[in-house]
Length: 89
Image (cartoon, rainbow, N blue to C red):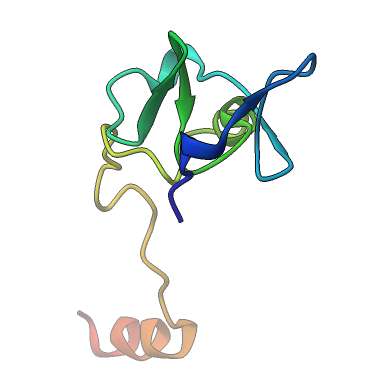
């Protein structure tokens, strides 16, 4: 759900949209297609606190980052693995 900044209000806390305070984007957000500009500052159009999304790694809303396929190990069924080992594969 994209935020509509047409009804945004500047308060002491920051920019408030529909009762939610929006925080400015962080450096990792640069290049994302979801960035909205309001009164010369850049905000995420999807999430009010962009820094929180980047705290644990890559933001799941980002449009400019890609995850590498096959990074994790595939799960192996232990029963099938033991049968393959018994057959000599």
